[in-house]
Length: 118
Length: 112
Image: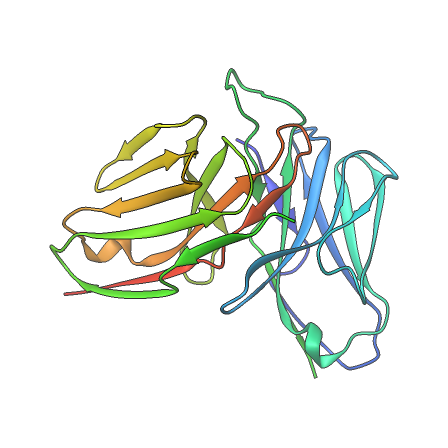
């Protein structure tokens, strides 16, 4: 089974702190994603990466940066946390192209990190 | 820019009733995904719809795709309490760009 893990389930930080959210996948997927989930807004893509050291901005990249030094690990960084970044953060991974005998490439999600910025 | 709209946002229904969740999207696509999220948990894949007219069923849930109308539906038959969850649709705009765009989600509550 594909496993996507995130470093923390719950995190409380203070305004202005630098915050690191880590995500690791064990299926050798090329693509990894960071989303934030807020009530009534669904999932919004922050950043994604389609290869090591490659990254692309999603729909709401402001206030965030990412790092992908190894294929299995994708980190989300809040350089200076603010209260409006209080949210649920979800990491996901996906292979490039169909896999596992399927004609589509399924996306798998981690358990999420609920971040509160005070 | 691809937009994906789901409605309703909230749905409260009695056990035993039928209802439908709608997912409209704004650009051509023939790949649509449905996910379920239980409270406090992550998203699990429910269905993948890969062509016009595709229909998938699992238990009391049935999903369909009309690519000409740019519409997918998730139909719930004779609802039971353990179907209470938030349901998301997600659309892949161009196969190969590896990005899914998600709808806002529908929070479904089944009342005994």
